[in-house]
View 1: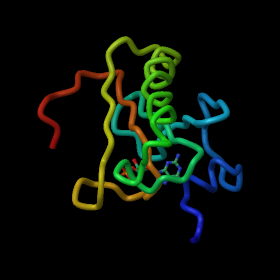
View 2 (view 1 turned 180 degrees about the vertical axis):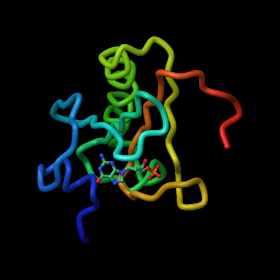
View 3 (view 1 turned 180 degrees about the horizontal axis):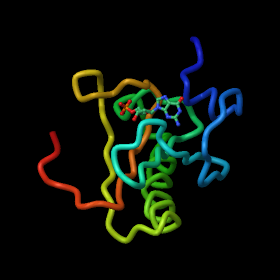
View 4 (view 1 turned 135 degrees about the horizontal axis):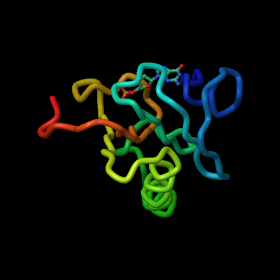
Length: 112
Ligand code: DGP
């Protein structure tokens, strides 16, 4: 399988503005920000989407949820939104699981 753009970023084949990294995940600024802070948090394991995660991925998914607020805090955010676009019909364009972390402006609800 060809690498996705996010795997290339994880492997440092493509540059990105990385704001957090550990053994399991990487966070970097979105190239097309939709808010003053728009960071993508991605597992290093190449899961295409959330539905591809298995029981064995439980701690990895939990890790992402624990790290997301730390990344947001590191960006100076107290209030923020996490978004996972799941499938093309929901706006997913990169098929490597990622959490969008948005903040730095008033966020309306419901999203479009
Ligand atoms: P989604 O539509 O949920 O699959 O989100 C994919 C996001 O990835 C989108 O907001 C734009 C961002 N993106 C796409 N290519 C690149 C890239 O090469 N670098 C960075 N930093 N972000 C990218």
